[in-house]
Length: 245
Image (cartoon, rainbow, N blue to C red):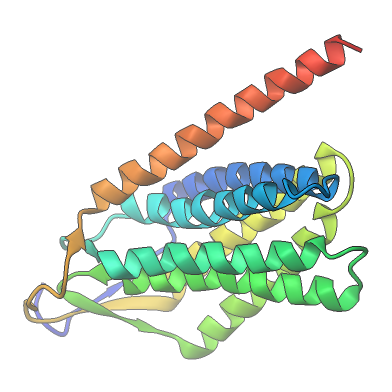
């Protein structure tokens, strides 16, 4: 393709499905750790809260995005700037931690719930746009600015609905919250693939250290693998506790 040619993104099924599965897994395990933090007041609750934020940010958001983008077909070679990829992870973690902290406030009122939802929505949407901004390729991406605003609003609404379920007891409530967060993450991918276009340019010099998409995909798969192992271990421990009753 020649400089000035436009490559319109399209919604691919495989990236959406993969991102949804990873996001729901990460969100569920994060909310499980968060639920445990609610019953602790000896200082260990902060450890569970940190684990919850890292699992939500690193697996439920960051890994879901980068695995989805890794299998998205692009007509040119794509790399990722290290600083941009790290910033996407940092934003996803930091805003997830802030959202969960707000949600953990004793008997949070509507104000705390709304603030938690806004923060979680920023984690979801910010992680996506920073991840897209980290792409290094022989093109630049043009976005529909109004569409970006709607994407952020959708992420906030879905995250607020999800966190309203997160404090309720039972795996069904946590599962429902995780599904809503998964929809929020996949909604960013779907909308981003329909609201953005890549405009080809002349070859540009490399800007800083770049990572191959495969490296980020392997890192994301490692995080997902660890989360799966922990999930299986937790399930066995719960089953053993039920058998011991």
